[in-house]
Figure 1 (tube, rainbow, N blue to C red):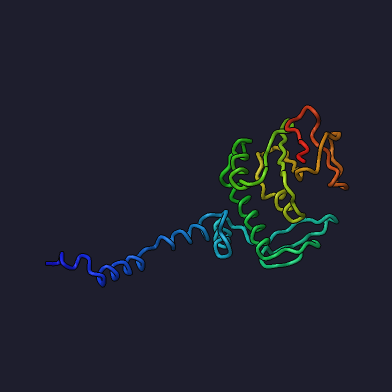
Figure 2: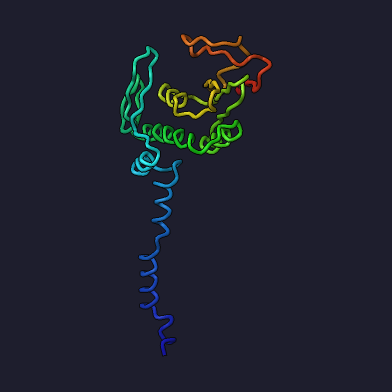
Amino acid sequence: MLAQYANSPVIVKLTEGIKEQLDNTKTIDDWFRVVFDLRTATGFGLDIWGKILNQSRRFQFLDENDNLVDVYLEGAQTVDGVAYTAEQMEELYRDVLFFKAFSYITNCTIKSMNDLMRFYFEDKVVFVYEIGTMAIEVVFRFFVNKLEKAIFASELFPKPTGVGMNFRFIEDGAWMGFFEDGSDPTEPDKQPFAPYDNKPFYPYDK
Protein backbone atom coordinates (compact mmCIF):
# COMPACT_ATOMS: atom_id res chain seq x y z
CA MET A 1 0.00 0.00 0.00
CA LEU A 2 1.27 3.49 -0.87
CA ALA A 3 0.04 4.85 2.47
CA GLN A 4 2.94 3.22 4.26
CA TYR A 5 5.31 5.63 2.50
CA ALA A 6 3.29 8.77 3.38
CA ASN A 7 5.72 9.92 6.08
CA SER A 8 8.89 8.60 4.54
CA PRO A 9 11.70 11.10 5.39
CA VAL A 10 13.27 10.60 1.98
CA ILE A 11 10.04 11.16 0.03
CA VAL A 12 9.03 14.12 2.20
CA LYS A 13 12.44 15.75 1.68
CA LEU A 14 12.25 15.17 -2.08
CA THR A 15 8.78 16.70 -2.34
CA GLU A 16 9.82 19.71 -0.27
CA GLY A 17 12.84 20.19 -2.53
CA ILE A 18 10.65 20.05 -5.63
CA LYS A 19 8.29 22.58 -4.05
CA GLU A 20 11.16 24.98 -3.37
CA GLN A 21 12.43 24.60 -6.93
CA LEU A 22 9.00 25.29 -8.42
CA ASP A 23 8.01 28.06 -6.01
CA ASN A 24 8.25 31.36 -7.91
CA THR A 25 7.04 33.58 -5.05
CA LYS A 26 10.47 35.18 -4.55
CA THR A 27 10.90 35.71 -8.29
CA ILE A 28 7.55 37.47 -8.51
CA ASP A 29 8.28 39.58 -5.42
CA ASP A 30 11.71 40.56 -6.78
CA TRP A 31 10.26 41.42 -10.20
CA PHE A 32 7.54 43.55 -8.63
CA ARG A 33 10.08 45.42 -6.47
CA VAL A 34 12.89 45.83 -9.01
CA VAL A 35 10.83 46.40 -12.17
CA PHE A 36 7.08 46.83 -11.77
CA ASP A 37 6.84 49.35 -8.91
CA LEU A 38 8.30 52.68 -10.08
CA ARG A 39 8.81 53.75 -6.47
CA THR A 40 11.26 50.88 -5.82
CA ALA A 41 12.54 49.98 -9.30
CA THR A 42 16.29 50.21 -9.81
CA GLY A 43 18.77 50.02 -12.69
CA PHE A 44 17.30 47.64 -15.25
CA GLY A 45 13.79 48.30 -13.93
CA LEU A 46 14.12 52.05 -14.39
CA ASP A 47 15.48 51.50 -17.90
CA ILE A 48 12.35 49.48 -18.74
CA TRP A 49 10.15 52.28 -17.39
CA GLY A 50 12.16 54.68 -19.53
CA LYS A 51 11.31 52.61 -22.63
CA ILE A 52 7.63 52.45 -21.66
CA LEU A 53 7.39 56.20 -21.05
CA ASN A 54 9.74 57.17 -23.90
CA GLN A 55 11.93 59.10 -21.48
CA SER A 56 15.70 58.69 -21.65
CA ARG A 57 18.14 59.32 -18.82
CA ARG A 58 19.27 62.52 -20.55
CA PHE A 59 17.98 65.68 -18.90
CA GLN A 60 18.71 69.30 -19.85
CA PHE A 61 18.18 72.50 -17.91
CA LEU A 62 19.42 76.08 -17.71
CA ASP A 63 21.75 76.96 -14.84
CA GLU A 64 21.81 80.27 -12.96
CA ASN A 65 23.76 81.87 -15.82
CA ASP A 66 21.31 80.59 -18.46
CA ASN A 67 23.83 78.06 -19.73
CA LEU A 68 22.41 74.77 -20.98
CA VAL A 69 23.43 71.88 -18.71
CA ASP A 70 23.18 68.42 -20.26
CA VAL A 71 23.04 65.62 -17.67
CA TYR A 72 22.90 61.88 -18.16
CA LEU A 73 21.21 60.58 -15.03
CA GLU A 74 23.35 57.56 -14.37
CA GLY A 75 26.49 56.94 -12.34
CA ALA A 76 28.31 59.14 -9.84
CA GLN A 77 29.13 62.59 -11.22
CA THR A 78 29.31 66.30 -10.42
CA VAL A 79 26.61 68.57 -11.85
CA ASP A 80 26.68 72.35 -11.53
CA GLY A 81 29.19 72.10 -8.70
CA VAL A 82 27.25 69.47 -6.72
CA ALA A 83 28.58 65.90 -6.34
CA TYR A 84 26.03 63.09 -6.77
CA THR A 85 26.40 59.40 -6.00
CA ALA A 86 25.17 56.73 -8.40
CA GLU A 87 22.26 56.06 -6.02
CA GLN A 88 21.26 59.73 -6.02
CA MET A 89 21.32 59.77 -9.82
CA GLU A 90 18.98 56.76 -9.83
CA GLU A 91 16.59 58.66 -7.56
CA LEU A 92 16.69 61.70 -9.84
CA TYR A 93 15.90 59.56 -12.87
CA ARG A 94 13.04 58.04 -10.89
CA ASP A 95 11.69 61.58 -10.32
CA VAL A 96 11.90 62.29 -14.06
CA LEU A 97 10.03 59.08 -14.88
CA PHE A 98 7.41 59.72 -12.24
CA PHE A 99 6.55 63.17 -13.54
CA LYS A 100 6.44 61.79 -17.10
CA ALA A 101 4.06 59.03 -15.96
CA PHE A 102 2.13 61.62 -13.95
CA SER A 103 1.27 63.47 -17.15
CA TYR A 104 -0.41 60.35 -18.57
CA ILE A 105 -2.62 59.47 -15.61
CA THR A 106 -3.88 62.75 -14.18
CA ASN A 107 -6.75 64.98 -15.26
CA CYS A 108 -4.81 67.90 -13.70
CA THR A 109 -7.46 68.84 -11.16
CA ILE A 110 -6.13 70.12 -7.84
CA LYS A 111 -7.40 66.98 -6.10
CA SER A 112 -5.84 64.50 -8.52
CA MET A 113 -2.51 66.33 -8.50
CA ASN A 114 -2.44 66.36 -4.70
CA ASP A 115 -3.41 62.69 -4.54
CA LEU A 116 -0.48 61.77 -6.78
CA MET A 117 1.91 64.00 -4.82
CA ARG A 118 0.91 62.23 -1.61
CA PHE A 119 1.30 58.86 -3.31
CA TYR A 120 4.85 59.52 -4.50
CA PHE A 121 6.21 61.84 -1.81
CA GLU A 122 4.56 59.85 0.96
CA ASP A 123 7.10 60.83 3.61
CA LYS A 124 7.43 64.48 2.53
CA VAL A 125 5.15 67.50 2.30
CA VAL A 126 4.27 68.52 -1.27
CA PHE A 127 1.00 70.12 -2.28
CA VAL A 128 -0.71 72.00 -5.11
CA TYR A 129 -3.14 74.86 -4.62
CA GLU A 130 -4.84 77.64 -6.56
CA ILE A 131 -3.26 81.09 -6.24
CA GLY A 132 -5.60 83.06 -8.46
CA THR A 133 -7.52 83.02 -11.71
CA MET A 134 -6.02 80.39 -14.02
CA ALA A 135 -2.94 80.01 -11.81
CA ILE A 136 -1.71 77.28 -9.47
CA GLU A 137 1.35 76.77 -7.32
CA VAL A 138 3.27 73.65 -6.33
CA VAL A 139 4.95 73.84 -2.93
CA PHE A 140 7.81 71.56 -1.87
CA ARG A 141 8.30 71.72 1.89
CA PHE A 142 11.71 70.07 2.11
CA PHE A 143 15.26 70.78 1.03
CA VAL A 144 15.63 70.60 -2.76
CA ASN A 145 19.01 70.93 -4.50
CA LYS A 146 19.64 72.65 -7.83
CA LEU A 147 19.18 69.64 -10.08
CA GLU A 148 16.06 68.51 -8.25
CA LYS A 149 14.58 72.00 -8.64
CA ALA A 150 15.32 71.87 -12.35
CA ILE A 151 13.53 68.51 -12.63
CA PHE A 152 10.55 69.43 -10.45
CA ALA A 153 9.99 72.76 -12.18
CA SER A 154 10.57 71.48 -15.72
CA GLU A 155 8.05 70.90 -18.50
CA LEU A 156 7.83 67.30 -17.29
CA PHE A 157 5.50 68.46 -14.54
CA PRO A 158 1.96 68.37 -16.00
CA LYS A 159 -0.41 71.29 -15.68
CA PRO A 160 -3.91 72.16 -16.88
CA THR A 161 -4.05 73.71 -20.35
CA GLY A 162 -3.87 77.50 -20.25
CA VAL A 163 -3.12 77.60 -16.52
CA GLY A 164 -0.02 79.31 -15.18
CA MET A 165 2.10 77.29 -12.77
CA ASN A 166 4.53 78.51 -10.12
CA PHE A 167 6.91 76.42 -8.01
CA ARG A 168 7.93 77.26 -4.47
CA PHE A 169 10.60 75.47 -2.48
CA ILE A 170 10.33 76.03 1.27
CA GLU A 171 12.55 74.13 3.66
CA ASP A 172 10.84 73.49 7.01
CA GLY A 173 11.96 75.86 9.74
CA ALA A 174 13.57 78.32 7.33
CA TRP A 175 10.68 80.78 6.91
CA MET A 176 8.09 82.69 8.88
CA GLY A 177 5.73 85.60 8.28
CA PHE A 178 4.72 87.10 4.94
CA PHE A 179 6.51 89.10 2.26
CA GLU A 180 5.12 91.43 -0.35
CA ASP A 181 3.64 89.62 -3.35
CA GLY A 182 5.95 89.25 -6.35
CA SER A 183 9.34 87.59 -6.71
CA ASP A 184 12.84 88.60 -7.68
CA PRO A 185 14.45 85.91 -9.93
CA THR A 186 17.90 87.34 -9.18
CA GLU A 187 17.48 86.51 -5.49
CA PRO A 188 15.83 83.04 -5.35
CA ASP A 189 16.50 82.69 -1.62
CA LYS A 190 14.37 85.76 -0.94
CA GLN A 191 11.26 84.72 -2.82
CA PRO A 192 8.19 86.15 -1.09
CA PHE A 193 5.24 84.19 0.20
CA ALA A 194 1.71 84.50 -1.12
CA PRO A 195 -0.23 87.60 -0.05
CA TYR A 196 -1.94 87.54 3.34
CA ASP A 197 -5.38 86.68 2.01
CA ASN A 198 -4.17 83.71 -0.03
CA LYS A 199 -3.97 80.32 1.70
CA PRO A 200 -2.13 78.23 2.66
CA PHE A 201 -0.01 80.05 5.20
CA TYR A 202 3.53 78.98 5.99
CA PRO A 203 4.25 78.33 9.69
CA TYR A 204 7.64 78.45 11.32
CA ASP A 205 8.13 74.83 12.44
CA LYS A 206 10.99 75.08 14.92
